[in-house]
Image (cartoon, rainbow, N blue to C red; front, side, top):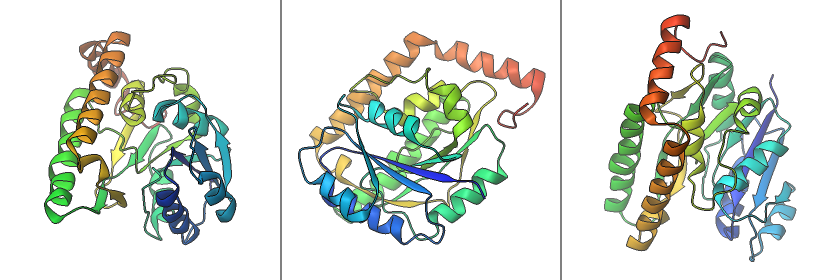
Length: 252
């Protein structure tokens, strides 16, 4: 069996984090280590980590991108799984994730969507059918492969070692999952598994201010990534690589 590290970036999310860690403690396949990246929290995040007996590391540079990179760098597992503080994985999440990652190619990341909780039925429907489905299909067309969903994905450590210097690690307004998806090299890909689901809070969609902030971060991420490599050049490089080597993700 491969070893698994679970990385959870968190900033002032102690209440949500406690529920996430409780769900991880009930996994049929326990994580080999759980790392909470405390992104300069001022609440009782440290006490929650102590109570759950998980490792807490501090990333003072604000932003989910530097926090995620910090956690992935510190992870010792052969598989690095990623949750948000408000994610609530079902009991078999890690067990299924492990099988999926080991069944995929060594350069294939695995991800899935969320079942949204909180708010009202209309907001939950919008989150699952417009927000997530729109993200998946629009980004698949842009990237040439499915995107990673930050609340629910895993990569092998060997993939991370190749991507860690490519990722935009210092931007406060960078979506880490979108940026990491863009940084995948032509021989890497993403497996989107519709049935690999975790609970996710609707709070980013409950207020126009929160929605606007996420859209602003998405635009900042696009602009940063496009300046690094134009999307048409990226897709052409993937097509050329695939023409020479076959489907990506198999560790050619």
